[in-house]
Amino acid sequence: MVIHAKARFSSTIGLEDIVVGHSHIEWKGEKLTEDAFDWQSPVTGTIYGTLLNLGEQVDALSGEFNQAPYNNPPNRPILYIKPRNTINTHLKEVAIPKGIEAVEINATLGVIIGHTATNVKEENALEYVQGYTIVNDVTIPHDSYYRPAIKQKARDGFCPIGPWMVTKENLSNPDSLMIWTFKNEELIQVTSVKDLVRSIPRLIQDVTEYMTLSRGDVLLVGVPHNPPLAVAGDTIRIEIDEIGSLENRFVYEDVQVAGGEKV
Amino acid sequence: MKHARIACHGAIHEATEVNSRIKLSDGRFVNEKEVVWLPPVEPGTIFALGLNYADHASEISFKAPDEPLVFLKGPNTLIGHNGETRRPKDVDMMHYECELAVVIGKKARNVKREDAYDFVSGYTVANDYAIRDYLENYYRPNLAVKNRDTLTPIGPWFVDKVDISDPMNLKLYTYVNGELKQEGSTKDMVFDIPFLIEYLSSFMTLNENDIILTGTPKGTVNVVEGDEVVVGIEGIGELRNTIVGDTVFAR
View: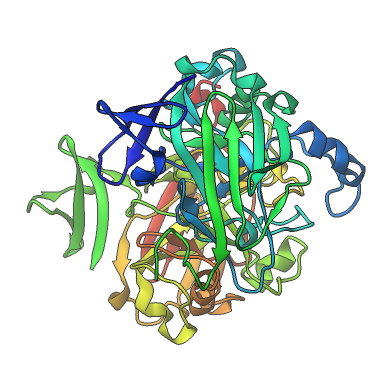
């Protein structure tokens, strides 16, 4: 099976059409292996993550929702931002900060917005979607969701995204996609977009009720329950059906400063 | 020098303040009444501080934190001077927050506090409105409280760092319909500007045009549709904003 996708490279401006085959990627009539490209993030806008949107996670934590400090179950989507310093790309290294042993691998689907979406209704929501990509919301483990997790989520290079975007026309059913996480080629977690508490259209509705999503913005549909951990030396590959695979190796901060820049 | 981004004469312009007038970069002077003020900086990452003045923390029943309470905002929430901010009809408590906004001038990583100002390009004024009805105890304060469209007026001027001799000793004030409601001084911040730059850059890279909203002092009160809110900071500027209702937005 081949995948028709759009990618951004360091040598190009804008998105390039590519055809992803089993062992090669076709670009401008040439067939190349994926390590021949300098992959850039396929998106340019703000990346918004969603907490507590997988059924398994919500079920597991529901006993805590009525206790301090939460006191009530979540009502609206709980969003957070992966700021621009976190952007990382396919086949680049992710630095584990000094003093941190292991980081969470939060494999998720990124919904890429195609045009300005304000106060959108669920039934029209997919009209505002341009496509989909793969995101690894790398996070330092934290037990409490009470305060914003900036220190845990906003580290340099903590948001591998890509390798490319698959436009919605080339994706049969985003609501039933499976997300597969491999560590050193061993399958360690499987989640399904079917398990979302708020489906993709519902999430777009509830978010755009109060904030505009613009072209190039990305909405991450949710992070898994009990995310697996990665340590320095691990290679993590996240595969999503009909989209592709996003692969990153984890290293110590001394070896690699984040944001993908070598010292 | 004071810089602005404004729309007039069919284009977006950079402008400066010259003899209390607005001068476009192409040489034309324009009347304030003819221009639309845009946020003075095209923002990178927008940081905001909660509970960064001890008197405001106690006002909303918190003790000042041991570590900065930082949250992030998206570009959707910013609007310029003289803009309109939407107050949804079902809310009981929406308050302004007059804040000194610090603009980062260059890439900063692992900066020490004694060098922190080297990484600042200048300052502006922000009004970091909050709608407290929407608070939930998950990643609090969450985006539904703080990142709504139109909820963060900023401007009118971006003021060069060199023009502000001591940013940690500036008067802040808020007028609602001409009445003074909030007064404070940046000297009462729990975590000052050098601390915040050292703290943030200790675990992430700050980049040019990232903005840090440094928190608000005591004196935040509810505002309603029709209110004119002016937040000001000594030497930097006065930022005017009007609260409007849902009907303006066809809600």
